Image 1 (cartoon, rainbow, N blue to C red):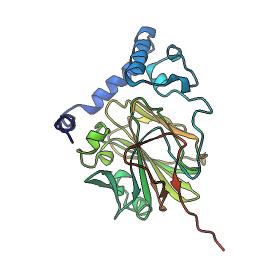
Image 2: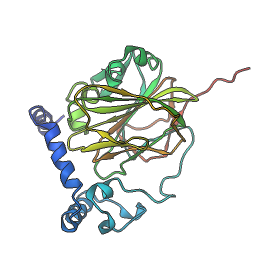
Image 3: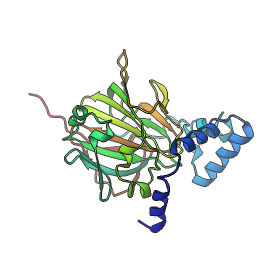
Image 4: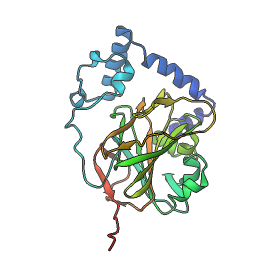
Length: 283
């Protein structure tokens, strides 16, 4: 890590994370045509956003910056592969087996599944022999999150926390970053056993939404567990949530995943095959 990256990480500790994020959220939700069009055009230029993939390619057609940022893609923009799918466009920063209940955050840094999932030791035990994958969404990426496999929602857990940046520099320096930030833990039951989809908040991420609850964060400053009266089944590749500004998705699987041989920090796209779970044939 360079000195500037270390300084960037250290400077985040005293910042009022939530206040900055909520203020950014107000600007992002502004529907004044001059304000929102100026923000959108500047963002497209700064991050080289490819609008040709968008269902609505005209930047001025979006009612707010948030609507632009969570824009839908054309139906054929992301073909689905086989096996476990990438839930989002982004960087596959880490993946592999859990080791003694620990996930890898960055080189030299690990954190516990129990803390990530909200402190429930019984829930964490379901994933002790499984695998994980972390996808970081940069500002230029498509920001809807999709299902890696078909699943039925068991419960949703809101976990309060800080809002550190989740970029590579911060992940390499701030211990327990993904288990320290505000996050939404979604537990699904699948044909491969339990799966956790953890949507991690970050600096200037104004909100996290799900398709079944709408906007969820920010909530109050204590953990909340939510279950729903009717079964919520989401098919493989279906949208399950979205970020209003960029962040990270951490997936945990109860069974080991045979991941493809990816290079470190490789870019992936939503729907791309990440690997397979071998399901035993019952005789």
